[in-house]
Length: 257
Image (cartoon, rainbow, N blue to C red; front, side, top):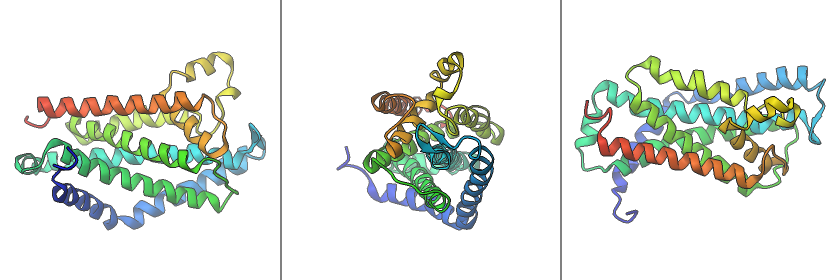
């Protein structure tokens, strides 16, 4: 399948989406840098003075994986959902669908671009965080694995949202009302063990907990759940998103209407 791919078409979609990103590069890059700095000022100074360390890790360093994951999730969803929604809104989606481009190639182009953007922003946040706190990544290979898996998975999720949404309001509905709250409640700024037993159990039903835990493990060798469980949950969500995208293209849901 890979050998028979129409790579020029994938490249064209990818470069078109990346060009849109670079046109607003100043806004796209400055915004996460400012937001990260504010998080360190607020959480690092206000809370860090009271909670000096979590599981033996300085609080300022402890929140870095959570900050990266928060940005990675929201940026992946936003970039992918808007990337496919705008052609539907403008009516140019029919030109893409009538071109000699397969659904797999369309997904490769749009999801690849969205994942690239979110990974770039995640790395910018990491570089910004290094200005505030000393960072040492114990398992850089696993960090890259989780970074790639999360970016691709949530770009696919955003792609599904972009196809499902029939208006700009719906485009923002799931990211604002579901994903962002789950991320904040998923241990971005605290360890699950710090919660009372009841809320600790409730937190384990939050899928974002497993993403953040695995990502944090790659930094410090410690997580709220085991690495195998974190990796398994991430791969499971990836499979679910792939299945959803496959079903949409097979049925033409929201594409042919």
